[in-house]
Length: 341
Image (cartoon, rainbow, N blue to C red):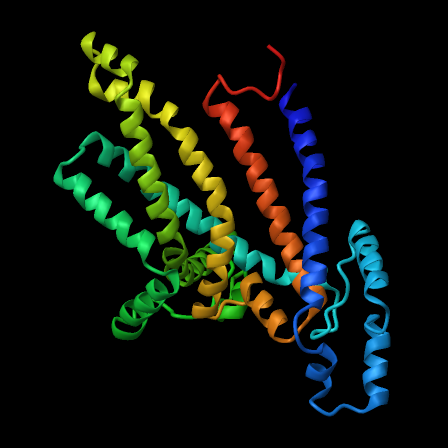
């Protein structure tokens, strides 16, 4: 079975999973105490206005009918209309998804770029001061809540030192005119303006990225270290040492790649933790992303937004798991896509 058939089969297997997510989210959302109409119209709405709102959004229909209509809409790409914003849920998600994805992707880049070398060096120099320092850093990162890290970073780098902004997130593709940067007609002027926007985006992204990526960095470091230690104690590694193979060659050619399967697994599983951490990070740094949208929709009992955002996050997680499984076969040739022996 080739990679394309394997990917297609996994995507088809994800369909009942996503249908289960839609079903559970629909009934749990509608079981939340309270009435969205009361929130929209106030504590004492007129009967006429309340009935008009219910009829407009289909809230006057029986729950099973609403469920069937909602599933039919999802199958056609329609996630409903937001009760609070009055716009299609897909439109609201597309507005809020880019900042969250930028935050999550950058935090993963930071976590992997720092955790993998740190874990390898820690395993190579086991029980040396470098190893002890790496273990302390990873332990602090795992045991410290991300929101507390964010508050401390704001307090130090934004409030006391004034080096970095404490709120908001600027997208790298934002229009330079939004920041008062007027690009001239020449190509060089446009490049300079774009570079300044990228600089602004980088400074705004740094603190949220560190806040969200610290937990992932710590978790990946611990797995990388333990996996490298296990591989370095294998018989074939000891045999290579007995033959006089340089330690750097053993580490690079024989140990590192074989130690990455657990690391890939934890990276894939960290995707769900990253989304949950993004909720707190966006709240701390006042970033208008998916996390804040979910929180606001729960407060306002915006059922369509709650269900739509949950479905999108679940879909991204499923895709992440599939990519993780595909990565197994790339890293370890012994892993196949399901061919018969």
